[in-house]
Image (cartoon, rainbow, N blue to C red; front, side, top):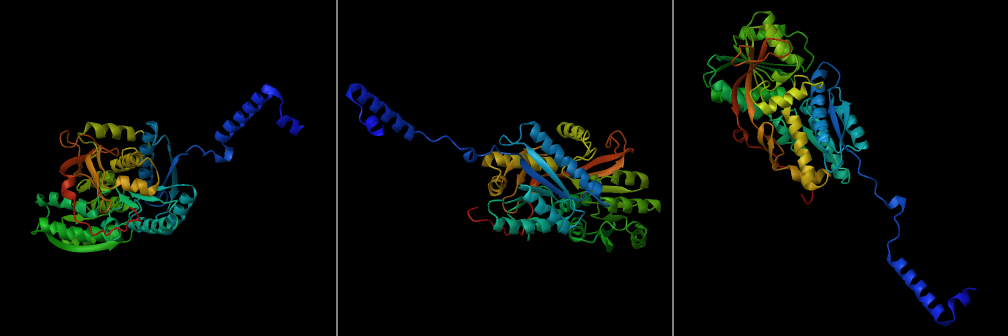
Amino acid sequence: MLGQWMRPAGMAGRLATMAVAAALTLAAALPLPARAQDVPPPAGPIRVAFIDQLSGPLANVGEIFLANLKFALDDANAQGGVLGRKYELLSYDNKLSPQASLTALQGAIDAGVRIVFTGASGSPVVSALVEAVNRHNERNPGQRVLVVNYASLDPDLTGMRCSFWLFSTEANAAMKMRALAEFARGDRGMRKVFLLNQDYTQGRVWAALGRQMIANARPDVEFVGEALHPLARVKDFAPYVGMIKASGADTVVTGNWGQDLSLLVKAAGDTGYALNYLNNSGGGAPGTVAAVAQARNARLTWVAEYMPNGDDAALNALAARVRQTPAGEYFAPRVLIAVQMLGEAMRRAQSDEAASVALALEGMQYRSAVGEVLMRKGDHQLLMPQVVSTIAPVDGKTVKVGVEGTQYGFRFDGMTPARDLNLPSLCRMKRPAGA
């Protein structure tokens, strides 16, 4: 039968043969229908991880940063996400431990996370995570990860220990002390200074910077004592207050945060000892305003990228929205800025691959809620304004709104623009091939 079909008789047969041949030729030229396994799956969510303390004595600080991060990601998702994809947040409790942080990091990587947010646990945790990410990225170029630090102030993170895979959106301790030194220049009530800090990298750096920068701004000031104490383990600061009082100090330079700051202020207030405090960012942490209000004779001056309850309408509108979340009164604009800049970097790179995002992010100038900011290319340190404010009683003029259920709020005492915080960096960044 096949032989007969191949030898059709007459013109009609020849035409039929030609039609079949043409059809076979066209079919051969057309692409084959895609098999199910050849069709790439639709892009899933962009998974990011939060790794910080959610238990223990400083859990409330971690919870506030988690709430700020969730707010920022929800805001981005409400605007359509990035590259047609939504963010998905995975949170991990590191129990304030570097080792637990590394376990969380591995779990996050296994879950497909490529961006990790951290910082509230301090520089030991951030350093451990960055070192692990450096090794992971070198061994797994197809699964590289970025780390975003939103809270640790250690200058070495973007200095001697800088990494291509780390971006810091919090001003470092040197930048914050520069802003406070400018405040100290005009503070004639400061005559004798005691340095009291937590016994870890950030605390020791804050003490050293305080001694150096305040002395430069106020050579007439006398440093009368210095002490370190364990992080998050002191329940009664009365012995330390006794040391400070014996020194005759009127001002304490302290990088304490969380309960270590609140309990220190409370202990001094309980003795009736009037003290001024120069602090990095703990003034915006839960419990601090209440402690100052209870002490009554304390004055705590601190520095951050904005002043809560200030006169900026756009910032106040954002803060009002944050108050409707678990973050409550504690808005950290730098977390929102970090998410916004990452999103912009992904759009510019048209990718969420870590190296591509890093290259788009470094050197980026961005108009943020706190003004123009710049991600320095050389060390991945964000430059942004730093506002000095003091926790003080509501007076209807300089302090208009009380917080934490008290009649104490924030008084504006100065602002150092980003350009004046562009301090030298010791970073010698090792960049991946081709970057």
